[in-house]
Image 1: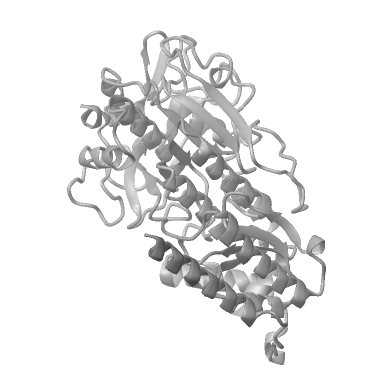
Image 2: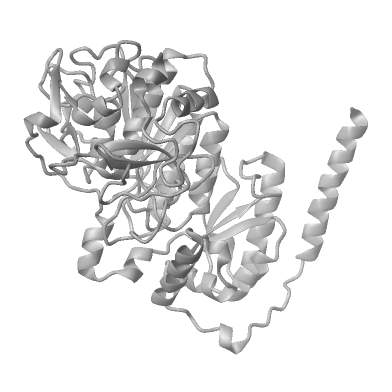
Length: 500
C-alpha cells in the first residue's frame, strides 16, 4: 500500500513540475494579421447557428482562437476557465486544484501584463473554475495550449443581443414570463377535496389515482428558475393548507441583477417573471381548500431558487446564478430531485460543472427539452437537457403523441407530458403569481415540473430506493416502454403504475 501511495505522489509531482517548467517564461505567440480582427457578434451567432443546424448542438470549444477571443470581447471580456486533469475533474481538491489555478492565473498575468486584482473576478469554492477578464488573443492561445485547462468560454456573451431586433428581443428573452392571471375553463379541471382544482392533464397521467398510494411526503424537490412569488400564499404561509401538512417551503436567490460581473449581491428570492411561480405550483402546490390548482406532489417539501431573470440563460449573472443553485441543491442532503425549466441553445461548461456536481451527490435532475416559437425553433433538445446527467422532458398534445405547438423534440428526450388540449389549445391550470387567482402554463417547462412531481411520488413510496431505481420505475411505467421513441423517449409516464 505504501509503495502505491508513494508512486502516486511521485507521478503527481512529475505532472505538476512538467506543467510549471513549460510555462515559467512567457512564450512569444505570433498571430497572423488576418486573425487579429475582432469578429462581430452577428458573425459569431452565424457560426453558432450553423453548428446547431449541422450537429444539433453548439459548444464553445468548436470555435477558432480568433472567434473565441472575439466572443469574449463581445461579452465584456469576461471569461470562465475550467481546469483539471480531465473533463471529469471538475470538483475542487485542495492542493492539486490550487496549483493548477495558480499556474493558470500566472499565465494570464504574464500575457495580459496586469496584476491579479485586475484579472480575477471570482474563484469557485466547489468547482475547478475561475472567472477572469481577458483582453488579448495571445492569452487565449497560451491557455488553450495548457494540458490542465478543460475549457475556456465567454461567460458574458449574449446570443440574444446579437441575434434579434429590439422587438424580437422583447418577445424572445422574456419567454415564459408574465404576471397575468386567467380564469380557468370549467372543463380544464376537476374539483376534489377539500376544494382544490385537479388539472385535466393530471388525469392523462393517472396522477389523482396515484395519490391513493403516495403524495410525495418526505421528499424534497428543488426548483431552479426565476424564483417564487411572495404574493402567492400557497407557496408561502399557506403551503400547509387543506390536505397538505407537515412540510416546508424555502426560497433563495442566487441571481445578481447587475451589468457588472464583479457584483455579488443577489436581488433575493422573489419571482419577478412569473415562470418560477408556475413551476413551483405544478410540482408541489398544496391540495388546498381555496378553490385553486393542486400540485403533483402536494405533500412534498419545496426549495425554490431565483437563479435567473427569465428562462433564456444569457449573460454572466444568469449562468452564474444557475451554477450556484445547482451547487447549493447538490450540497443539501435533504434534496433528492432537481427540476429546471430553463436553458439555451448554447452550452455553458460553467453550468455543466454545476449539473455534474449535483449529479455526483445523487440528485435526480429533470430539465426542459425546449419551448419556443420563432426563437430557437430550429433547434432540437436544448442545453442543459441534452446532457447525459439530465432527464430531458417535453410536452405533447392531449390525445396524440405529437409535440405541443411550441415544444422541442429529439433523441435526448426521456419523457413526455400531455399539456395542450386538442380542441381549445388550453394548457395546464396553475396558481397565479397573485393570491387567489389562477393561470395557464404550457410548453416543455410545465412538462418538466410535472415529471419532477411524479418522481417525488415514486420516491416517497420507495424512500430507500436510489435515483436509478426511481428513474427505471418511471421508464417501465411509460407508454413506449420497453422501446424508446426517437423523438419522445419513453413517452407519457403513468403515475399510478409507477407507484404500485
